[in-house]
Length: 268
Image (cartoon, rainbow, N blue to C red; front, side):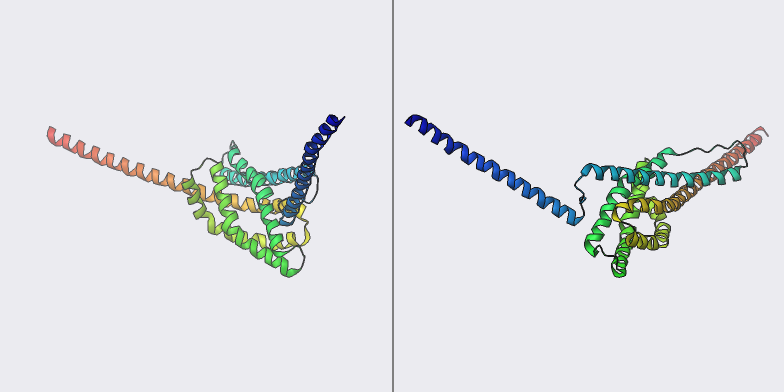
């Protein structure tokens, strides 16, 4: 009996501390999880809704809308440009050739940047300037967006879409430099009023859809600017090639004439 009592005491001495340690670890994990969720919710990096699956479905739905509108904007611009070419060519059999790689670059920008990164940026604006609807708060957010757009958004747009289309980094930077001023002007004209209305009247969960709707017109303008600069560069290259070919043909004709004169003199 004494031996059994010793065994029971020994088991209790080993098991009870282990149980206490496991309980303390479980409590520590719960506290850490609560603190992490609270910090992420306050900072705007995680949804306050407990259901992550619901948030993921909502994000996927908005990302699909953003990508569809961005792709539709580029297709609209390509169609208008094709109509201009058709009028210039005066060819009834002119067919519209869609650049799907270019369209997919706009769609990918809508999915990954507008619906994800830009949403986090505007959540950070909420954390910095507040969630109120006062005019002073909204004006601060719009002013911050007018700084963020030309410095971050526009360069990322041209680099993203250019690299997606297979251009080199040097070509993307050169295209950004050539299109930057016109794009910044369009940004300053289009977005201040729209962003004031979005920050003032639209809930945070619906901002992506409103940004995509306003971005439809924006992407049409950007696509038109980009295609215009690209078309002018192609035309300049063709003119240079034609001029060089003409000069080469002139040199060939001149050399041929000189050779003919030499042959005639030799025969004489």
